[in-house]
Amino acid sequence: MEILIGKQPKGYKIVIYGESGVGKSTLANTAKKPVFIDIEDGLNQIDCAKTPRIRTISDFKKAVNYLSKSEDYDTIVLDTADALDLL
Image (cartoon, rainbow, N blue to C red):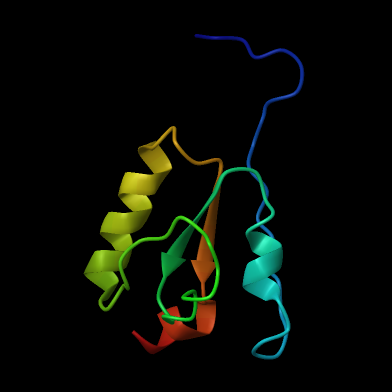
């Protein structure tokens, strides 16, 4: 058994809520090494790393699985949760 001592790093989960066009994605793009899971197709005006548009829950699960193992990015941004809910 491994004994853990001290602080254990764990990711943050942050929700940014606001009307369309107020800058939620632009703000999220300032996070450390972000990548967007593009569900809503609203990232065309932002210079960012993003997945191809997600159209199914299966595609979403594949993207999350791939990105959670990637060392290229430190922040995964879901754009947007309400669009995911519609899938």
